[in-house]
Image (cartoon, rainbow, N blue to C red; front, side):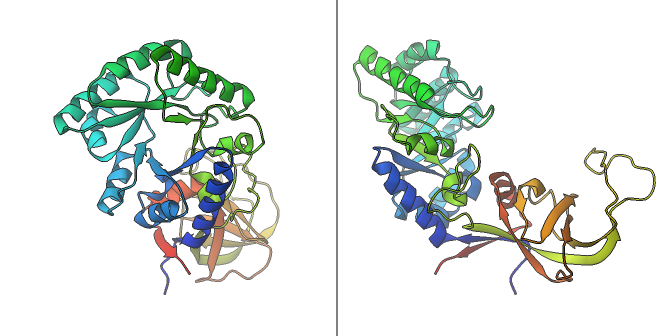
Length: 355
């Protein structure tokens, strides 16, 4: 009997998505860094991405990179979140490259790399409008200058990140600015950078539009590969599977109940004050999964059913019929928020499926 709740991860569909994106972007002169942060360092998923043609792996947690190394993964790996000072030693030992925004951190990486007698690659992230991480463009040359002076540090290039905090879309203007900065650095310091990383899955609309790509030669893709959609409007990408990963949960109660609560209404378990409308009697099912395990707002329920709410460990579903019984399993598609939370929950089993 299969465990529940569980994520069912179809490796063949992930391979298909990754391979298709790698090939389409290669025609534009762009390579793919496969982002594994939503997969908790899964050796199986990492191997699938590399088999599909991904050039290197990227993760925001050094713990996940360490897990992939333990899984005998020797691929080039990039820590895509700026390292913590407290983890610098681990970063230089297990990540080949890290994305950085603070010169103090790069100095510490240099110190630890000297102790470890290794070289560590650095990509400098530039702020281009989304107001998450990034060096301000006017400060970039000074940061490059000191990075180049530090022993055991290899300056690999620059990158940017958009559409994560403020929803700023990658477009011809901000991508041209990144190219301009790349060319300024190369002219100023008489060097050729290996990496000009334009961003994440939100860049696909721009990258595949036929626009001039300039110096951009790398994209960091996670959601587009795992869920088959772009991340500006969450629209499915042509020819990709949107159900490579699904979530199954089991019904533990099925009853007809009123839609209007009775009694004085105060805050619920999460500090919210619910507002309900009287819609009469409905068929309600409770599933053994909750906010501790996933993001209920990120679940797409099957046709004829609708997610109505959740507590820590209960998910409330309404059904148009009477087809949900105790012991029935319901399968959901997920958005990225629901996927990340489900993948990190120890109560959700992870089942790898491959033909």
